[in-house]
Image (tube, rainbow, N blue to C red; front, side):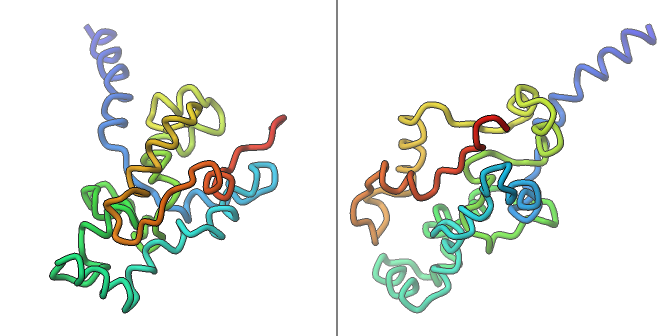
Length: 178
């Protein structure tokens, strides 16, 4: 009986942890992902427009665009704008660790999933990290489709999306051999 109870509890742990994954924020990811061994991934993101995505919503120009779109709130408070300029307004705030900051814009977990479930695991066991919620991208068509969920005609500033050109600016693979 005791063995069955312990087994049942242990088997339920991964399910519970996946269901309660929390967003930890780019600052939690950065220390490990800024090294050359990791391909300077944090630096690539930091120098990208993704890192500035939230800030653009705080400008007078963004508010003009929001108003022209019929939005009644400033851009930085409008869900329609925040959906693509951060993940913060499309996720239940209860899922944010205190280290998560909406002002960091389009950050690691926007594309790779809530890091709370895999942040420690992914160093030792990538397969288990994926089971725990790490999103990896191998299919470039899927990457392009995901990017186009924001980079599309719904955006009032859309001027076309050259996926290959833009992907070359933001891709951040771990160098081979690491």
